[in-house]
Length: 535
Ligand code: F6P
Image 1: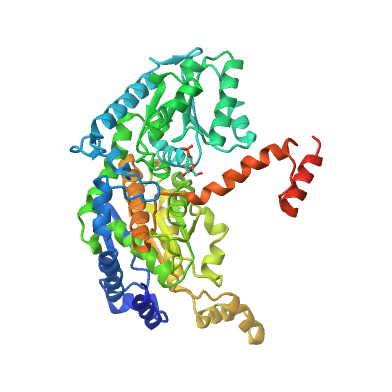
Image 2 (image 1 turned 180 degrees about the vertical axis):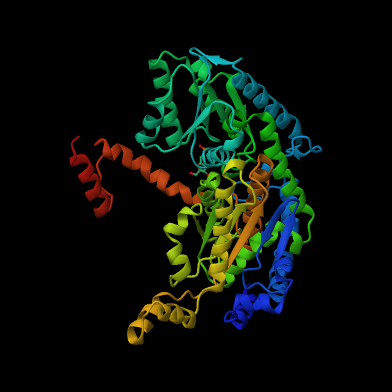
C-alpha cells in the first residue's frame, strides 16, 4: 500500500529540509493547517506537495470519509466487539437525535450530564457533605482510561481548579493508595470508583481498601462513594446507591471516556461551566474533522504525518514534547490512546498486517526533556520525529518572562533538529577555541549535528478548557485516521488480556495455594525468590 510513497521517499530522502524552505518562501503556510485559533505546522518535515497528494490519496483509497461518517452516526465500527464508537456524542449533548439499537442516546446522555453538574455544584458549594463537613478532597480510583484522561485534564486545567483537591489512585501497588490516603481526612473525602466494567482487579482492590479506610476513619461509604460505570449490576453488588451511580454505555471506549461520567473528577475540580467549555472544544474539532478537505483537516494531516514517518520513512517511535508543564501527563495519556488503539498486528479481516502498526509514543515536557534525552534526538543514530506543543501565552502574567524562555526553547529545538550543524562550522568553532590538527578534527566531529530531523509543532493561544478539548479530540481523530489507513480496529484491546489471565493464576501461586507445575523455569525461580523473602 505504501509502495509509491516509499519510492517517493527514496527519491527525496537525501534532500535537506532547509532547502525546501529556500525553494519555497511560502512553505510554512503551505504545509500547516489552522482550525480556529490552533495552528499545526508540519513544514519542518520532508513532506512535499507530491508526498501530500500521495498521503491524501490513501484517505480516499482506504475509505476514511465513509468510516468517519459511520462512526459519528453510530455504526458498529468496533467489529471485534460489535460495538458502536460514539464518544463524540458525549461532547455534543444537545445534538440531533442519534439512534443506537433504535433508542435515541442524546436524552439519557443529557440527563447524566445534568446529574453530574448538579452533583458537582452541590459538592463544590458544600451543599453535599461528608460526615466531617464539606468535601475537601476527591479520590478518583480507576486505571487506564478511567484514570489517565481525568489526571491529564485535571493537571492541564490547574489554573481553573477551584473545587476540592483531586487525587488519583490507579496502581494496584499498595504504595499508591497508601501514600494518598495518609494525607487526607476519611470524613471529608469523596471517593469516586471509576471503572467502565467495574471488575478491573486493580480498581476493585483499591476501592475495597478505600472503603475500609473510610469506615475505620469514622466516615460513611453510603454518603462518600460514587461509581462511574456501564455496569449497574456490579455497582449495586459493591453497594453503591443508585443515586450515586453515573452510568454510560459500551459505545464509549475506556481511553475515549474523559468526556462523560469518567470526567467527573475534572468537573468537580474546574466546575460544570469549564467542563462544558472542554466539551465544546472537542465538538469544534469534531465539526472541523467532519467537514474540512483532507489538506486543511488538522486531524487528517496530523495522522498523515504520522503515517509518513512511521510506515513510509520507517521511524518506529515518535516523541510528544509539550512545552507546557501542565500537559506533563499528556504523553502518558497519548501512550494509551495511540498504543492501545493502534498497536495491533492483525487487520480487521483477521489477516496479518503487512506493514508496521502504530508507533511507540513517548515523551516528557520541555524544557526538562532537553536536559535528559534530547541528546539522542539530536545526535543519536535513530531518527525520532518530534511533536512539539506550546501555548503562545501562559496563565501567569507576572511570569511572562518565563513563558518567553519556554517558547524560545521550543522553537529553538525544532530549528536545531532541522538545521543541524555541519562539520565545517564545528571545525571553525573548535579552531576559535584554540584547537588544531588531529585533535581539532576529533573534537569537531563530536560537535556535529546531522540535522534534517523532522518535527511538527502544534501551537495554541493559551491552554484553556476549550483548547484542551480541541487538542484531545484532535489526537483521538488522528488515531482514528491512522487506524483506518492501516486497516485495523482501533477500538478493541485484546492484547491486554493474556497478562491479566496469567496474573490470576499467579496470585494463588504466590500465596502457596497451588503448585507451580506447568510454569516455566524462570517464572518458578522468581516465585521461589518472592516466597523465600521474609519481611
Ligand atoms: O486493561 C485495559 C483496559 O481495559 C483499558 O482499555 C481500560 O481503560 C482500563 O483497562 C480500565 O478498564 P475499566 O474502566 O473497565 O476499569
